[in-house]
Image 1 (cartoon, helix red, strand yellow):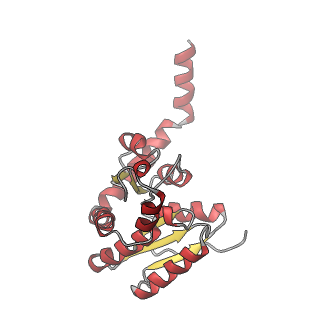
Image 2: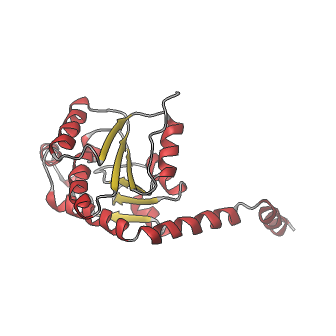
Length: 212
């Protein structure tokens, strides 16, 4: 529980992925997309945080980072204590969740409540949440409708590069980097709005109005 929080340089644009390390979370596609992104934005960094649910896949990610010469730009952290993960989220600029499947994502909820920008594929609860959060950018997922895909086809898709999907991720990363100052201003406004919403005096006044 005493593991240190990774050092984060505020001059860099920090992207973070918080998810179990397995193929359904599409970290390999994110890494390939990031390799293209840093050609245009070399000050960007990517942190991958999560339990190694698939050790073979984790080793493939390490090999991919090495083969694409991304050691300076991408860090595969593995599991961290929850308090460290939350601190890393708050210190990051953008949470990226390109998953093929999600339920009600805890990482997504934590990212949104941390008021950082979020890029997420249109699965699980993401489409329903999108209209409510200006800081949530939605991209089409790797497979249009996973229910219509056989297990064998899904597995072969997950094990291979998907250029069209990776292009969509790269475009979303680029879009954030290009609008970083706007996103940070939005984050500041969200912080002010939250302080106003949860101001004790305002809450008491609202309760009095409701019950008077």
